Length: 226
Image (cartoon, rainbow, N blue to C red):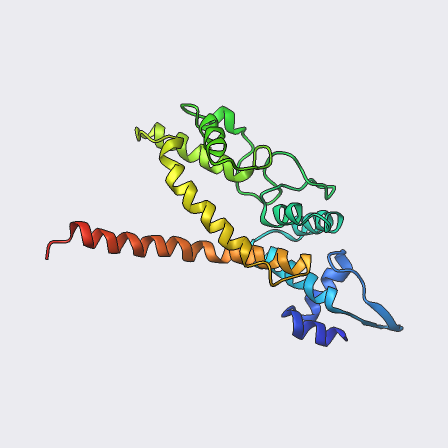
């Protein structure tokens, strides 16, 4: 297909496509003339993934380029690919998967979690994942969020530890199974990665809103004075 068709199919403007080509985010098409090239479905899938990483997940172009480099190197491992795209596994500047710490573009500060921990919140997260039998990468960003939340609650005098989170973790476990079950129809790894990203990032506000609606409903059942 020509670049105009690629733009229509992917939803990305022609100037933006040319910018991605110049910057190396998108591989060049097959040359058909001095100033013309043909593109294929692989370009469509990659552009959609780029659009999702930048427009949905909010990564910078530089961070997106690093993620794509890691994706290219690990397309045979869908588990690793999903971790890279969703941010569960940070990426080094070289494009290799990193074993710890947040990725570039994260809003988290650089101070180690252990130095901010209050009351053993980091140990609580380890106990929670062990209780659930979850297999996770070392020091994932999501675990840092949980440990800092628990530390903050304790600092505010709220008696809350990992045992209090187990019922929520069980709900999250079922939600994750539902999320990944919806990837089966997308056979191509790039399509699966894009779909996982959309299901995760775009659905999170809706899932929180559903919780609020359910809370209102059950509050009315328990506490409303009719």
